[in-house]
Image (cartoon, rainbow, N blue to C red; front, side, top):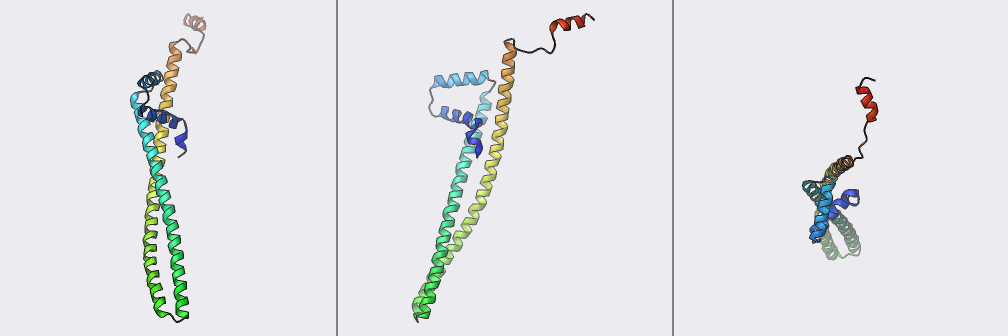
Length: 184
């Protein structure tokens, strides 16, 4: 989940923001700047798609984890209720209230059935959470790969731009090369 705040997150966040009504003039300037930096629309589309997918996967994972937490709290509450009903039934038997004890034990059985259902649900939700965590990790890896590709493209474009304006460094002094070519 740490990827969302990094440079990749800023890039796809800007793209998502642009799609929500940013002025077309700003959008054109952004596209021109990206083109100058060596980034194609396809690369930006990939970054945007993976960013949106990652954001949705993280939100889904959080929802599943919250559901697991809620279900666990419910299970603990039902367990306490089941224990309380059992203790109350024992007390009713000790005081000779067999009918009251029977009702409490029947209610306890109903609570136990709910508890079993909730515990099964928690187990299923935990499996889904593990799958979602795996999906988020895979999306983060893909995002890092795309970020690497974007950085490489920007670096190559910057190198080309600096060469185009005469800042390329030659390996050897041209005069020395000329003398070598002459055999001196």
